[in-house]
Image (cartoon, rainbow, N blue to C red):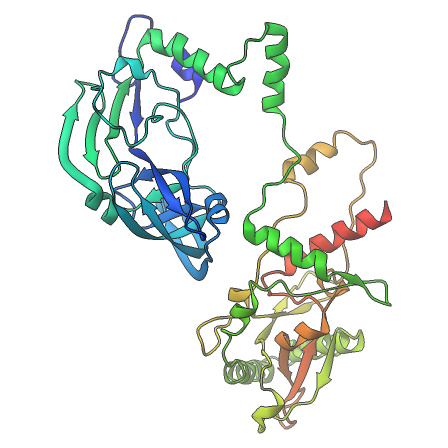
Length: 449
């Protein structure tokens, strides 16, 4: 509920819709990799099947995370994809109790709780009560979410009711939890909430109206700073450490892999890629025009040096041991005058180990400005220039040590023997391709300043 909505309540009325719901929170200790205690604010959620930990806290405690991809389904079927998990040890502040959790790492778990500052004085909380979170009434960040199974293990069957329309106190091994409704009275909503929200934004300092207005616009100002996750920071670090200028004037970069350990998880790709190529040849027989456009595209790929033939014998596994083969297919663009067919590559095909090349690759982040910022620029400058970068992905070379992860099977006729083409540049269909292409443009622009 926003301050504007709170402030619009009718004086003297206490209506049912003016309610702020308190969720159960607790302050707990998390042990870092050196065994030291780190205080964290936890949200207890009886409706969650998973536990979550923020990326900030994961970095602070320093435990090694492990890779596991899964989807998190929320309200209205919204799906968030997560790929990192961590095992932690949690300790109660009030009982000699320790608990083990396996948590999924997220950038953020939820908004600050409570959503508005609450006047704790309106509750008659007994003095002898040890609250699990003595700051439950102050909006603060949530570091940890505890899932349903542990939530019910933590409860102690003892409840104190603070009155109708007020929250209840539930005893637990983390201390007494506060949860339930708290009324927003007219006096509270129009004075206390407004003053507390202002003080929260302005750090409770005493300022004049002349100071207040500039501070308001500072809060509304769009920040130029980008908040990056740990994976995004790793992707940027790999780019910075590997990007070099080659003789042609273009750049060469590494493929941003999650880690060397993840690379070891890749299985065999040859059999699946060969099967997919045989299916493609059947389509060639049914559609000669499609075949001719495909051959033209591949030959141009080779002529420009973006792919090259390497030693290969389909009957001798030693010649392709350790290589990753990508299935490929053509995308027809009937309205295109320059390239009626473009070949794209399937880096999401699962290997025999169950992992695909894309599974072990970092995606990177969006390096270009938000669409809104781009549109605003059209109203600032007198002239606008738009252009299309020809073969954008293929203007960036992949480091030789990583080209073994980009191979395709090819031959122009079924009577020919199968050959292996090694792709030398950033490849359509790989997870990191959009990041590498746009990050390359940004790097080029910075060098031209």
